[in-house]
Image (cartoon, rainbow over all chains, first blue to last red; front, top):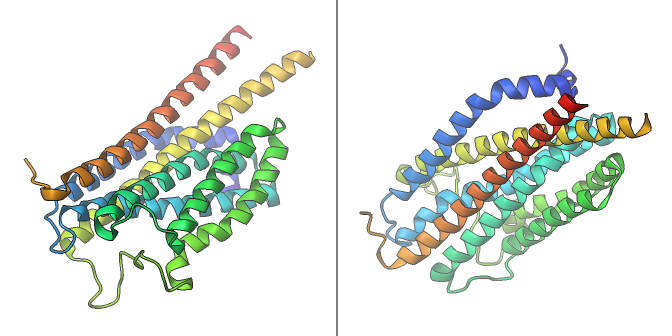
Length: 241
Length: 47
């Protein structure tokens, strides 16, 4: 059995339909549990209660970058192997990625005001995240602007390749340009830099929750796209007849 | 009741905005899927 069998829309609908109810339960438990646990954590001696924002900000930022990477892989599969489900999965993931980027930027600005004394700074990481958001919006707009679905998938695939540079920059901006207000990785494995367990475990749960929530949303949205595509194909067939 | 201290507004704003966006994308995804399923079923039934 090959993994490419799941690129068959009928098989994808059957397997995703069976998996979704379990995934919804797991996503709800982990997301709500992680956020609620994070909200109940004690104040940090330096940052006070604003430390609670980390349980939204970090998982959202992590997903903002990883969703673009997922879209890149799906786009490459489309461009190389011409599997329609992969192009539709990339299309389905984009609005979720845009929302995650927006959450990362909004919570960052709200957090930055009391900690840095400013809502916004043209810092490498903040700026690269803003550009990533613009790429998400451009990607969604390009899909809507082109009528032919295969041409739209081709062009958005190319846009996704270009945008990957900014997704990578968003991840490594702090290392590339050792300047700006934003700190490095929140979860370091280096001794002495590790986040306290009080914050680390709820953060892990929240990150898992955001990942599972993304999987649920991308499956639901891909199923929507497949149904729309099928309806359009049936209507076109009737028009020709 | 949890005491958020002097940063209560900051924390509640961050949670409020995030939850609003998360609920929004979940609701939009579910509603669009339900609409697409209804339309396809209706078309397949009526031909």
